[in-house]
Length: 276
Ligand SMILES: Nc1ncnc2c1ncn2[C@@H]1O[C@H](COP(=O)(O)OP(=O)(O)O)[C@@H](O)[C@H]1O
Ligand SMILES: [Mg+2]
Image (cartoon, rainbow, N blue to C red):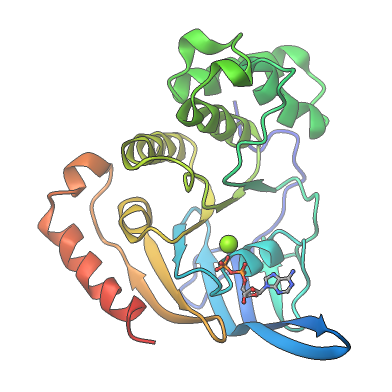
């Protein structure tokens, strides 16, 4: 089953290194205007951001609250337009509702009147994938990949927070989208659940590679998951450093907790986060 079935094929431009670019952010600056009792003030949420993400890369954006992570993701999703600069996703300007871009948030946003299975199928229905049998097979496959084999018929209230996010992960990954945007998807989970879900995500991504932009303020999570960690700092939001993560794959997030290279990367990036 191809994940791109039902999609219009897009041709990606190439990076100077010759690899295709999935996401290309060039000189992006964005201000929010705040109107306080007639006094208008501009907040520079992003300042001169440049980011090239090649096809299939897993990139984590990390930084303290307010450094512009969500703003940047919303722009890549086409929900916000940058004041200056340009963004291309798979060679085209972003537009909300594009089928080749999927977005997953911290809230699971499961429909309470639908079972786990029906929630996973819902995303496919919204994308007008009309083949019901395909939708069912896809939903079943995804639920088993996220470890919810026995919970197809469970409703939201019957699932723990971690299980709800598993369903949300299955629903997002079921979509045949080449670019996946994730805004603190495991932010509401306890540390153990976070590690488990991170491992599930890595399993899905290794099975069905795609480009991921993953926002988190958890540096452990960023390093364990990503090929690159983009460190952002606030006032104004900007990219402070772009750190390649050369840890071998496949990765066991649990084993990484005691890995010397993992800790060396952590210390190095921690310095950058505390520097600005
Ligand atoms: N809709 C908005 N109106 C006004 N200011 C906003 C809005 N959205 C974000 N901001 C401001 O822009 C900056 C970046 O916000 P955001 O992208 O949400 O950061 P992060 O996701 O890294 O926490 C913050 O100073 C925030 O207060
Ligand atoms: Mg945010």
